[in-house]
Image (tube, rainbow, N blue to C red):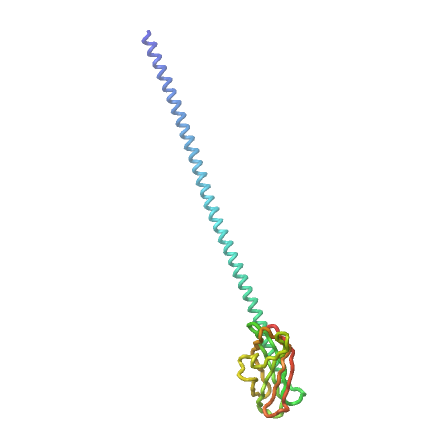
Length: 233
């Protein structure tokens, strides 16, 4: 009887241990499965976040490049617009000069009721590149009954002040390209003279005194004074 009770106790003990082991195994299996599901979900979320990050980086790079492209396009447009403005201004200036020349020639070819002989039609001064440099244009006309060319000498002086004192600069000192004291020209109806004056920095001009004389005809002498007026180019 004691032996049977001992056996039954041992059987019940083994059952409890088996039950406990099964319960532990079930708990461990459940925990493993739950942990696997959590890990998988976390990995999926991580991968999705990585994809979103890459997409955001690509979009940021695209936006940066678009910004650079727009800035470069704006700079190119600004440069092109400024170049176009300068070109238009240059064309307008050239057109105005051509119109002035055309009007001059029309004026010179017209008939006038004026005495025969030499006439100084005008003096035009414009600023030239360089400090104290000025481009000049002198128009000399001649009316005569004979359609023959005449030899004419042209000279001038620029009057003004230098260091507070009256001063005068002769033609060949103002126009450094001249070889003599004046110009010797030959023409039939009119002549347009062009050159450049270079004045000393301390010289303040006030007027230009210009004289023309036809060869072998002292009575043809003409002396004309022009105020120093510079036309901006």
